[in-house]
Length: 170
Image 1: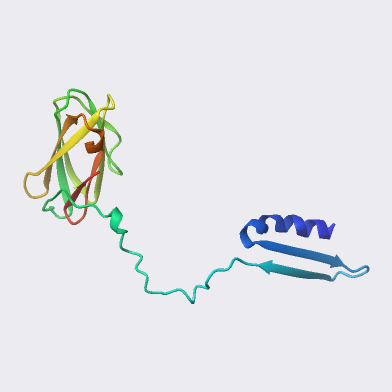
Image 2 (image 1 turned 60 degrees about the vertical axis):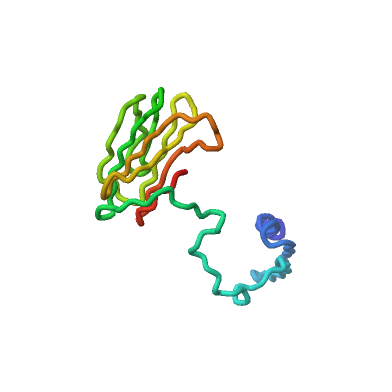
């Protein structure tokens, strides 16, 4: 019974460690168990051989995006005026700050004192494509005008206002 239990316990390790062989032999009239293990690990470099000066805080170059504009923040806060210049309702959300909200066609909303970084998403209710035009309208104020666009490749679905004031269109 002890022999069967040792193999069952090792089944999960086979995929992780490679080849594992375990046998247990119980001696009659003794509580002592002898265990023999053979473990073959994958051929990898130990951590102490790897170079330690690999930067892990910088994003990969292909993940870097140039800001569409930069605004001057007011004590780390930004006000965003969102204008819907489409002919349909738009749903927008400031992640971690608001639930999804609707903005009817031709309407404007002012979102006050959003702490940076701010991540905002927006989409048309008819699933059409959007173009976002940005304008710095004063210290701590960003105006975002959403308009219809026919080209999927140019469509935008959100923006990020970083703590530096850089605004990135997504």
